Length: 62
Image (cartoon, rainbow, N blue to C red; front, side, top):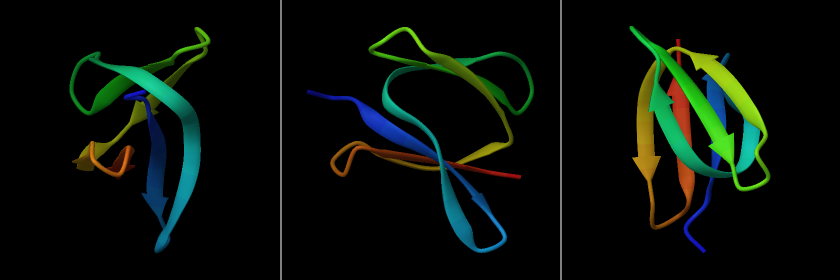
């Protein structure tokens, strides 16, 4: 499986946004739609800080 967990880095901590993400879709400046394998969707506003596909982790920040 190639899904990743998405986190938002804020106040020195990573907060889980969505698990099993398989699509990251840009929706304009600093806005991304995350879609997981179950069809759940979340919109994140911020910059992409890191995407590590080996550890299945995507991190966004302000």
